[in-house]
Length: 245
Image 1 (cartoon, rainbow, N blue to C red):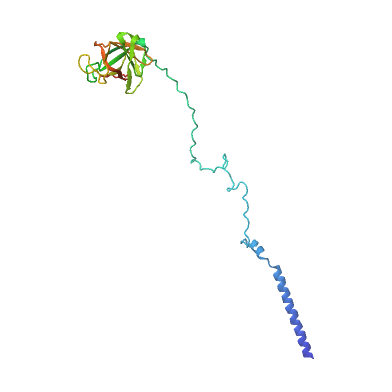
Image 2: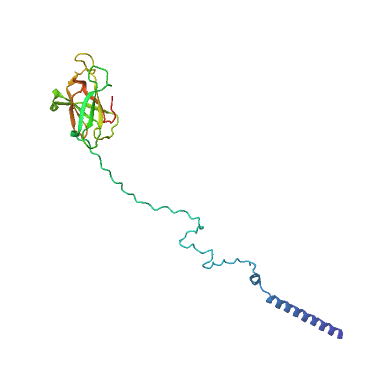
C-alpha cells in the first residue's frame, strides 16, 4: 500500500513536469519573430520583392539640363554647330540693255563671196554692216532676202531662205563690223545658163536685205554685174562678228 502511494505520487510529479516543459516551449515559440520580421530586421530580401522607391526630385536620375526641354545635355565644349540662318535673296540690279542698231546707223555693202558653189552664176554673196553711229548697238538674227525686179523695191521678189548655223547677239561698238553670207542655187552652163531643176535662171541687179529690228537695205554687188541665181532660193547665216569667206 505504501509502495503504491509512492508510485502514484511519483507519476503525478512526472506528468506535471512534462506539462510545465510543454507550456514553456509554447511560450518561447510564440515570442520568436516570423520570417517577414526577421527579413526586415536583417535587411535580407524576403519572399516578396520590395517596390522601388521613387527618386526624390533634384536627384541625378531626374535632373533635366537647364535651358532645354526634353533634350539630353551635351558635354561642354562638344556641342554640335548650329545651322546658319537663311539669308534672303537679294535682287541683282538689271543692266541697261543695249539697243538694236537702227537702219540709219548702219552702212551696208554687198560683194561676191570667195567660197561659192561651182557654176557660172553668182553662187554666194556677203553683206557687210558697219556701225556708223557714235553709240554701241547690237545685231542678231537671220536676214531676209528679196530680188528687186528691174531695180525697183516695189517689185521685190522674196526669196525662200534656209537658215544655217547658230544665231547669237553681236555687239557693235562705233565703227565695228558684222556680216551675213547668202548662198544661192547656182546657175550652170554658158551664155544664159540653165538650172538643174529645170527652171529658168533669174538675174537681179539689186537685192533687198533686211535684218530683224534694223530695217532693210537695197544693195548691188560692189564688183558689178547682175546677181544670177536659180529657183529663188538662198541659204543664209545669222549675223556674225567673224568675217565669212
